[in-house]
Amino acid sequence: MSLNILYEDNHILALNKPAGLLTQPTDSSPDSLETRAKAFIKERDSKPGNVFLHAVHRLDSHASGIVLFAKSQKALSRLSAAIREQLFQKEYVALVEGSSPPSLGVVITFLHHGDHRAEVLLPSHPLAKRAELVIISCNPHAANQWKLNIILVTGRYHQIRAQLAANGYPIIGDSKYGSTTPFAENAIALHHSQLIFPHPTLDKEICVECAPPF
Image (cartoon, rainbow, N blue to C red):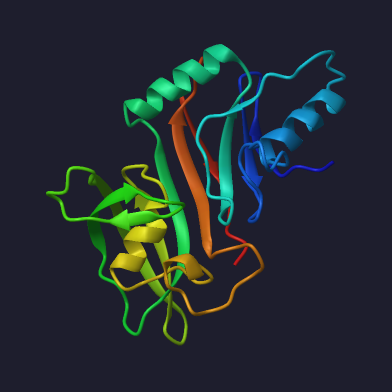
């Protein structure tokens, strides 16, 4: 079993998740990046018993890119705390549809985690949660298509997909949020390309990078 390992030490493991694969298993779908990584480590390191490995954050199954795993309970606890303290910096690359380029800068939308999708609500709605991202670059990709580099500020469910679509720029292949352009099977043109975070045991920052497949 092969994995695309981007970074590994005794405490953490960063992998490049392919589109179409869950980050973590569910009752109905046991196959996942986490399941495969556990099996890989158990075989590679000849580990007896269960392997401790837990995703620190999730990535939509239809998206690709960096997923960080903790290899110990201490690392998981400290990385989870760092996320709560907003010490993780995440950058994404997306291909979007649109007759004109989107504006650079901060995008703020108010979202609610609905039935397998994010719903856009008015800021005054009691269920609305503030979602923020920053479009830091935009370049033409093809006719009426744009390649965006995005910094994620908050981490809402389907946030990038819903925010871009709500502003008239659905991600290519994302029919759930209005895209009419075909893409690869079980995939959308969204990729987690850079992750910067404090190492859970060492006094340093780690930067993991992963080029998009598109």
